[in-house]
Length: 247
Image (cartoon, rainbow, N blue to C red):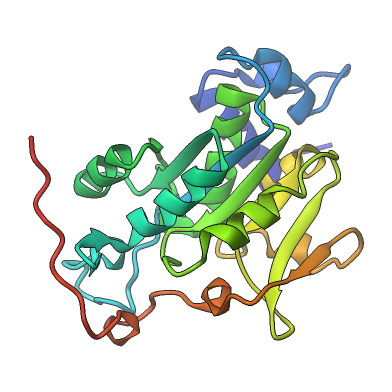
């Protein structure tokens, strides 16, 4: 039977990061099984943070000259607020960026992220998510991924820790809610990795989250789980510019 578009994309990702299609899947195991076998760095990590920071942010600045992820809040870029808090709850944090986002890369590395570029980031968040999942499997063999968006700098550390603490079962699937509305970050146990690896377009992980079976919702007193930076007016009214990075 011919491979679907999602299968082809997953094979391409695994081949690009060093897992050839012949090793990515064979008759004795799934894509995920083979990826885990081929992982080459370190021991299994309980929870790895995955920061999606590859969006173009066209609504923030249609010209593309100003990146919302680099917009400063109290002197620190938006994406670094998210990265810093995510890293507090995860031993490792992997950030996915667009090709050529050199300044963003430098900032995120300064805040402890391992940064990878997704060549298909222009195709939507789903491609960036799949790219990040594949890299996380290869580098860390995690038991769970804590997925967070780079344009959500207001989520409290306590909320992130609480969501991260629900890892422990391969089927774990947890999201926080505020006043009944589901937000971010979202924790995915390893059983969801292959599904996430098939994400494409702008869907991200919604295909998984739309299915309520197995989804644990944690009510938190944290409006930050719903608050992102989409337009310039979403930034706090009082902030200072981010300082230039030192060489």
